[in-house]
Amino acid sequence: MNILFMGTPDFAVPSLEALVAAGHRVVGVFSQPDKPKNRGMKLLPTPVKVCAQAHDIPVFQPTKLRDGTALETIRALAPDLIVVAAYGRILPQEILDYPRLGCINVHSSLLPKYRGSAPIHWAILNGDRETGVTIMHMALALDAGDIIAQRATPIDPDETVETLHDRLAQMGAELLVETVDKIAHGTATRTAQEESQVTQAPMLSRTLSPMDWTRPARALHDQVRGLIPWPAAVTELGGTRCKIFATTVLEETTGKAPGSILSADKKGLKVACGGGTVLQIDILQADGGKRMAAADYLRGHPIAVD
Image 1 (tube, rainbow, N blue to C red):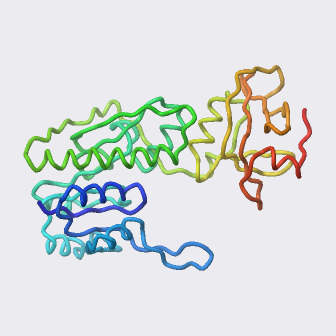
Image 2 (cartoon, rainbow, N blue to C red; image 1 turned 45 degrees about the horizontal axis):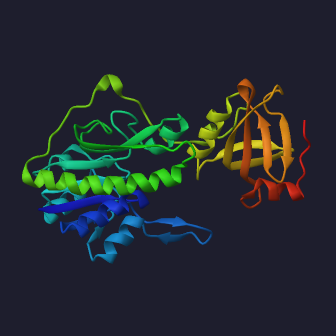
Image 3 (cartoon, rainbow, N blue to C red; image 1 turned 30 degrees about the vertical axis):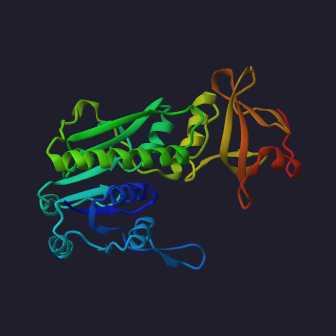
């Protein structure tokens, strides 16, 4: 079976690696165009492109999918199946219709929950206790295709987007290989998504960053770990804007007003939150500064206790 793989970021790399390791014939890889990064604005290849080149797989980076040139490339490659993992583009109907075994997608949520571009972030932002991966047939509507397979995993209360991302990427890769084998043998099932259960996971923006201390400590903790590495939760401490990268929900309670600094010492910063709850800030980054432990920051930037 010939497979065309489409993917761009780190999340997709384990899926491509797993297909190759399982002995599937990956005839080509589509990835987004290289983009300039860092101070020198040097064009850097996408992680999937780097992976494909390491395996001597031809890489294609079309800037458009609807002008017919991408379809011509696909016809020349003659894939039986297209596998998509975080490609970052919506495939037009003529591409979806081409492979005889269809197009399938690796999605990092338990669909129909969290359709969209940021399912891992929103699962954490909303304080979910469980998430997972879904392998589905692709449809023209975003993440709306029939489900082939799913696998669930608990979310640790202190787990960040970064660690959950890596776990789900590996889970998705393993489930993908199992699913491709079933498709090859004609034993894969498909189940329509329950439209009444659909929720969305839209793109993140900096409007999500400001911390509202009237919210409970647990909700703020979820905000911090759900916005790593970007755009990051943000608050003002001692008149300085700071990004917050690690916090601890404390068992103690307080009668102080939300936002009050309860302590600022070698253990970090304790801040009063909604409902009398308390959040400890462990790691922060002041504007123009480096990320560091809150205790280290306080040595050079003392903050008064309210």
